[in-house]
Image (cartoon, rainbow, N blue to C red; front, top):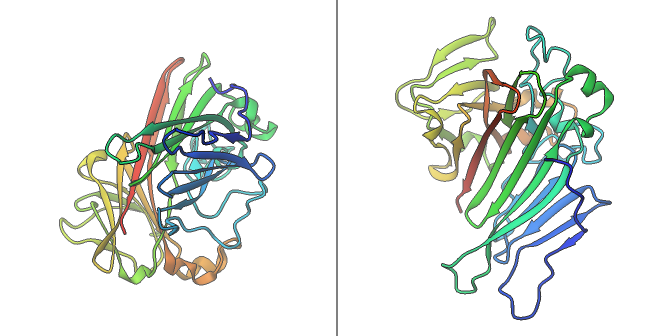
Length: 324
């Protein structure tokens, strides 16, 4: 499922007479995959962690926050972009199968395989060119280092898809148990959204949601107010379960204007995180005041565990729509 041969480094050259096509390239010694739509939107994914490190709209405006000190050489998990969390969110010292794993598991610190791309054309545009491009990445035990295999010795296959469209970015994951033993997992898409001023940001769609506040001692479970948006004025680390389920969109506004809308598929939880001034204690978080320019809104399945029996498959995803 995830062992297809690697693709050539240059895909989809434009041929005379064809409608404009999405351009897909593998660069930086086969360590990055980038795609550009004919209308100008672009995305770049690091094969290390299958981490989206850039997403720009047609005007070239970056939509994701990436730390200036982020390691992009495969030496550690990337600080920023959209890291993939699997098979555990945070650490789980009381969960036998994952207690040996590092924080957020191994997906974000393993090198994935680029499986290829597919495009779709838009009949509603004058040029008829590609309106989206989907990039697929695979991870299986053959891609893991020996430490990860020892810590989590299960047979699995992951396909992670990043779809760049004119209106937004979709990331989705298919998880398959290809072994003979059942296992459990958690997964999350750790999106760092770029904003201009955190003091002007509000998050809606969390009304009446139950949430776990990871910063209280002991960790507490609460219920969000029935009205009013979430604003950030201090360090925030909460796991929300929106009352309307995954069909409830989570919307980020800035200065009263809609900035992002996050739709979820089969991802019941939404983590909201901002380190505030504790950013100074995070070695790869630069600039230190970068917390003013980012907010993490992270769809996931992290409250409890998803169990897959032998041969079963699970999938989930998010659609982030950006507004000008």
